[in-house]
Image (cartoon, rainbow, N blue to C red; front, top):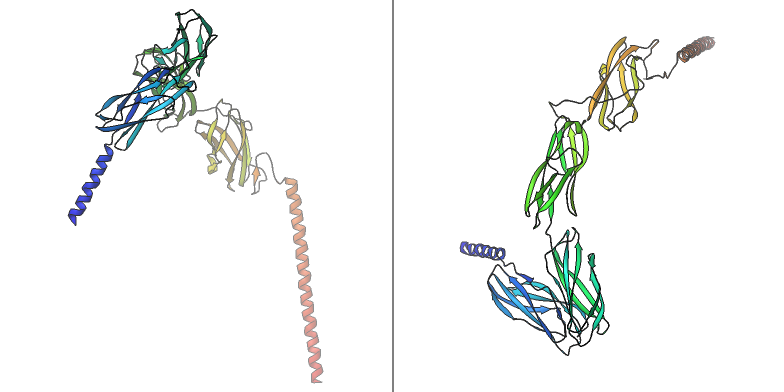
Length: 493
């Protein structure tokens, strides 16, 4: 039984290893496109690669029925191989003019991969045309396509060249007039912006001549990221208030060529603003933010940018500065419009609700603020103040009965700093225990006197009524006793 389990374990391990080492089969077209006219043949080359050696079978898909294709049915692949596909445009075939795709499919051990090429079919004409790219096409740059035209007929040919491209292009002269045997070459400049991804893009040309049918030429424009750049660095940063800040970034030139850059930041400074990077290289740099640029704890938004030709790389950054232990706490400006420095507040024994108007004259917001009074341990709820905002804040204090007067400190603490104000508290005259709001007596002295009189009158009435009720009970009881005596005497007689 143990041997059986050992065999199963070894078999599972073998299957895992076999799966993990499966070949990475790839088919890459080396010939992106070809133009064919009747009686012409073109050969398309494909590079087939695999990490595992073995017999590899081939077949074609998406073929055009009017054309003749020939391919090897299989090859022994050990690493890589070049596979050629011959495409013949028969002289008597009459397919529709246009662009046709076909794919070479490779199959090795159940794994498949495919590569696609294009053939452009044009009718017979007395004009021989070709459209080729003579230089590396790069995003963030312009590239040139060359249109070659030759009159192979027996009469003069004239007409117009029409270019079709998904990218902006320019051509100096779209007209032509060719004698028999004469040739002309025209340049088509295609502008590729920085957002164009690497790949193959079709560009076609229609030549409308007076003496022949419309002639077409096609080119697969192969674009590379020759000027690719990448700016890398943090988008969030946290620092202690009271410290200058350095944030490190790196600029990569992932392209093939040397590139000039201009680096900038909207907060702080960089050690150098202009420099040059070789292809496939990078440089680190710091964004330095001095303390005077971050004068209070809070959030600062800025951006770091690297400009290059048509390209522009930008990173938005949020810097948060916080109060840290052992660091200075900023003293922020704060005004109390209701209170003067020498203001004395009259309070009464019991609960007093002090309503304080707080004004923030700063050009920044204040967060998580708390207003407190060192006397009686009073504290407000947490509140925020926008820049230049005024808000009424309530502080509830409980004053003891034996209170006479005191000097109090009104403190404001917040994430952005703190400030304080001295207040004089004294006992209000004729004070009674009860709720008191700064500047407003809920019960005036006149109302208090009137209330006392009313209470005395009500008490007297209650006392009088109670006395009358008691006297009536005594009288009723005496009458009842007298009647009882009379009845008793009558029974005895």
